[in-house]
Length: 316
Image 1: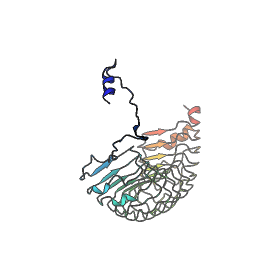
Image 2: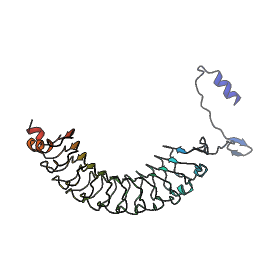
Image 3: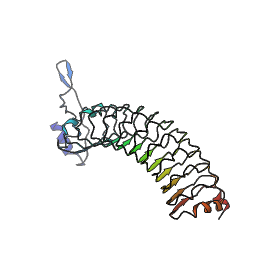
Image 4: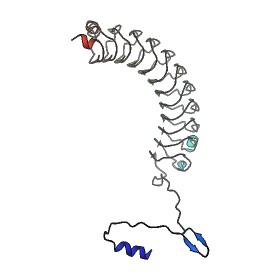
């Protein structure tokens, strides 16, 4: 090594790095590799004190929770392990019962597990994983927000214990029917976009619902929301609806989105006296007089979208 260092110091460029050739050490008739000091893999959470309440580790290519020694955080309230490669979440059972927010967005989790001791949890994000079944959530009686976007879920089920839930996001799954929501009487926001749902049904128990989003499904009739009298925002874009109807009791609506459906005329909205936004682009509306007749009586209407309708080409 001394010769190598003197050659480096005498080179034309002080910053030039010379290649170091790794040679075997010959002892007698045998060839042995030189001793190389091996280092233990560094704990990615080594800089966190045991008293931390918030722990976040993103884009770290984690495949397991076992190496993190998460049980040492006795006062943990938030754990964020977004965008890793975690497959098994069962070791969540070792976390402190003080945990309130668990974010495992964008991993490779196949099964919901390990939440039996997480009764204080208020927010759970398992979006963008590989989950097929909603299960093992009975202990989460304080849960307020549940995110299961972009998984492989076919059926809405096993949610009856979540009586405190106010926000449920099930978009981009494989759900074909609305069901299993009867016990969620405190639910305020429900997102079911990008599924395969063909009917608005089984929603009557959701009296507190303020936001319903069911975009990009297979809805052809607006129905089944007569008892949702507190509904303020209704998102129905990218379906197959040909007529606006079924909104007689939804007089608190401030936003109505019917973009990219099959409407040929506006109808049945003049009673929506607090409506502020009407989004109806990408339909088959042809008559400006019809649009004016339906919109003029709405005193709070501030924003309308009618782009990509035939009326745009034929009327001023």
